[in-house]
Amino acid sequence: MNDEQLLRYSRQILLPDVDIDGQEKLLSSRVLILGLGGLGAPVAMYLAGAGVGHLVLADFDAVDLTNLQRQIIHTTDRIGEPKVTSAAQALRELNPDIQVTCIQERLEGEALHRQLEQVDLVLDCSDNFTTRFELNAACVATGTPLVSGAAVRLEGQVAVFDSRREDSPCYRCLYHTQSEEDLTCSANGVLAPVVGVVGSMQALEAIKLLVGFGTSLTGRLLLFDARHAQWRELKLARDPDCPVCGRR
Image 1 (cartoon, rainbow, N blue to C red):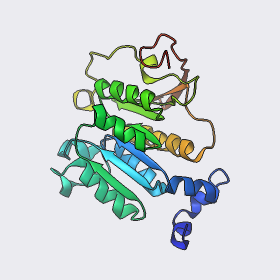
Image 2: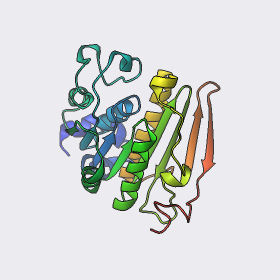
Image 3: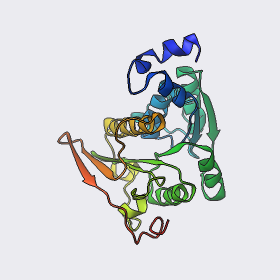
Image 4: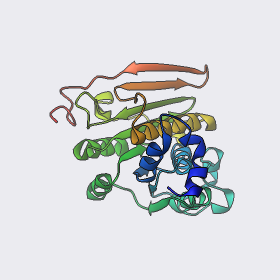
């Protein structure tokens, strides 16, 4: 680590849980962020600011005027640009010390598996069950830790699924089938700070996993009720009959 990095990350390095060793772990880490919308925006900015050395951004969508109410990584003058390009510009301006790779396509199948095999963890910032189910199955297959977040209306949730641990459930243990209800923000609305809270929690859990301190959310689900400013915690057990992780 050079002098400029020591200064840039000094407030983090001061923490005994991080220190110089932890900062070097962050700088050498490679992380995939799937989705650069309401959740992916704060996730990407906090991880870039914290010095995660290589961020892989995956999103097939373009910036739209309706995004700007909550997707704080994008700006009005970048409407119409690919979200990954817009996000990469913001991250490089925030921290030119890191490397950013953009994937402007729907990441699935073999391409998804190849990316997961190259990263230390992935953050699910998508907004649909189809993507979440496929990402979860790929994470179990590749042994990649998954930091999951979701937010809609005035509610949010955060969990960690770490298939490296024998006791960890997977996302499919929590949701056995895909919901037929349309729970997207475009259909139901969302209050901007709610995605900020959930995205910040995802970034926090990712940093803890990468550095290796504290207690992760593996085996727990945090539910956030913004209307009443309340958090609830649910214990998650691994389902031995889960079609994804039950026989791993």
